[in-house]
Image (cartoon, rainbow, N blue to C red; front, side, top):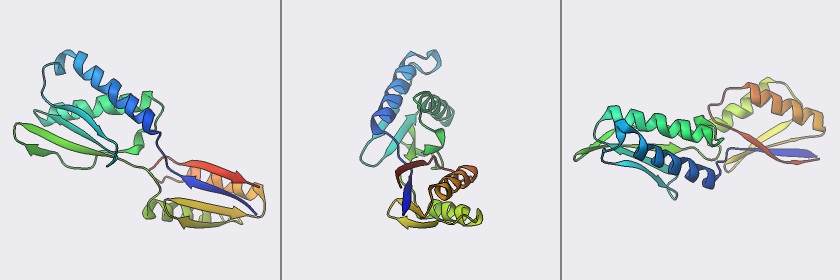
Length: 163
């Protein structure tokens, strides 16, 4: 049986490099030079904390972070900016989540896209990845094409191809 896994991973070192270059840009930009707060990466929680004096500067920090992440070669959809801004003393803070792994909702979308393509493969959810198996490699390639056409809202990688 041929198989492959569908995963969603972000290289932690590349993400850290993107955050560090965003911090450097924050220090050199004239309009943001003397602001309080900044950009902090929490590796354990897989989040990025943005803090500044007002929400307009938070939006500027979001823009800087997103451009630096994309320039490092990471897909921009990996960042989840949906959390609300929270006032904390003199600063406004916003937490940006970094999506890693295929959650159940995205896994269902992937499996539905594969079933809708009517390819002779079997897809199943395993922890934070989707395993796809088939008798022929051509069927697996058709499944990859179907998943790429589907809009799942998260960057995906296809790994562990075995024939």
